[in-house]
Image (cartoon, rainbow, N blue to C red; front, side, top):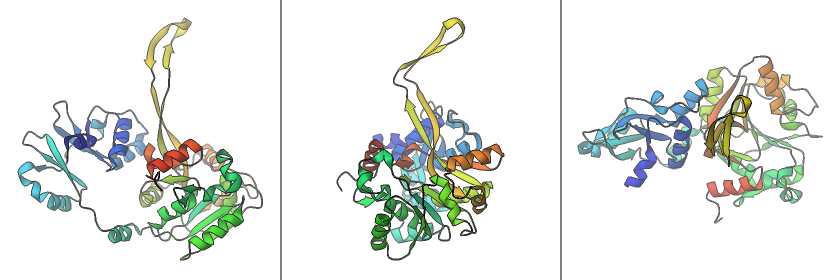
Length: 358
């Protein structure tokens, strides 16, 4: 590994959780090795460690030395030929190669398994239903949606909803329910030809019912927790882990949330009484979590949604929160959430998926 590549996997212990998430996004391996002020290995932190911390505390500004694993597995330079053996023995994905002074000179990653084995390992949600909300008009994407319904707008040369279905299929899911209204015949026609090995079950709205209202048409269909997703988003995350978190946490509703960083394009003034300025902050960054539009619901919640009424998932969430019931979040990084809802974001999605040449 070249020195410049190595730095993509190193971070100071004084860095914040937000900074660690951003760096993990860049290296795409889900792991960082933490160094001290002398650039010696001090610990390791993974995207899973960060996620568990955020679920427990919600604190984005904590320094990562408080969260990291302080006893990472290592291999010394003279033993590096045994790296894969160590990786298998300790069931880890990455192993730092260190000098006797504990400085990292290389990182060895677990050898990739063949594609067939990966799919077999991920075939974990085959009994889980997925509901895709595809009934809206997609007004933010007008005039595209004057011609095509939003689910059929292509990202590259594949419609967004087909990409969503393909992502779920890698987990063995084949039970898809699609709520439709606007230009529903076009959606049905396209997928009757493009997906032949299993049916899509259509839930037809006679009038717009919002992001939750149409779910009442599925009451009695599901015996366990099910996934609901908007038709214009892609989530790059471990769906099996999201589902498992929902069950273990005892949530009635789990919202997949994504980190969002916004830089204020001005110098911000902090003031006190009588107009006195306490401090100035140049172009500060604000970090928070946003609702991605992907949810896990327990089936009993379908009885909480009013029938034949325009009702959003946010309305359902508000009701549960007011009653102090179990609503949880599963946090993902900023780059793990791709939203096609607006033109600028649609182009970012194409770039992120490396589709500019398609």
